[in-house]
Image (spheres, rainbow, N blue to C red):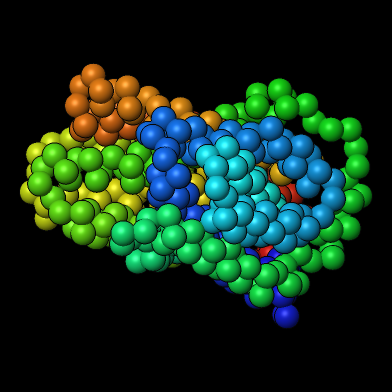
Length: 415
């Protein structure tokens, strides 16, 4: 019986989703607030880019060591550590009085988010039966979507007026308080049985090169990178496209909210979609449709059509993140799954740095709509990699097990 269905233990995933919602909501509030706070301190566009880059770059050096530690120990301690770092980074960013301090505390916030996500993803991978991983990762990422949906709205409501520095500082302090709420759900999430099993797996460490050469791992990392890059560039450049087409900022906000809502809806129906199409075909189909829709945003379509496209795009992009987690977990060696998830997050962070920079170069040469065409090409590559994704291990084991059952004359269908 799966740990996720044992009596008294069914609430661990719900508690994890709630905690992730508040942690991600705090980060989603803080990131725009950090930019406004930096502007109030006299930052220009280049300085804001550096501060945003530190958030993504600093955790790169910690991802693999954290994954290594989690592979041979407990996952749960990373969750409160991550919350403390997120809350501390938010609060100290709100009180910082120099751009260097803002950059440093932004990096602390990014490190906290990375710690929380590595610990949480490892718990889901470790405590979910193989057949439940797609569903559980889908439910887990609903927490991120909720935080991304609500966080910027709250930040926008708090920031404004003549004193931008004071209101952005208030938003950062509120974000710290929101992160702290995560503590209320961080209890009895990791089960003793899985902790004992992890401690028993104390063999030699699997080299990173071997993990990256395992079929399915590079593809899962790239799919995650492509989907996250599409989400980030969409958030950053849709306001620019709206400005050029005369779309009001309030309407752009509604359009982005529609995208986020569609992503949540997708993850609620992940299981029937997988049962209908299978993971590889689902990833391929949604990445292919997302590629077409991203390219379509570059066309001068009316606002209602843009809204429909963004709803469909949000639904398609909702598939890539949770299924890439399952792809990486099931492809990686069993005693290196947390490290593989950390490598996936490293790829995400690299994408968060490289994709906006590339989009800026493309937009400068070919116009503001060109980055969406670039994203279309990136997602086309992801679709091809999704088609080559390896089958689930439990599917590969099913045939020999069925053969042994028939040879022994036992039919287990009624058990």
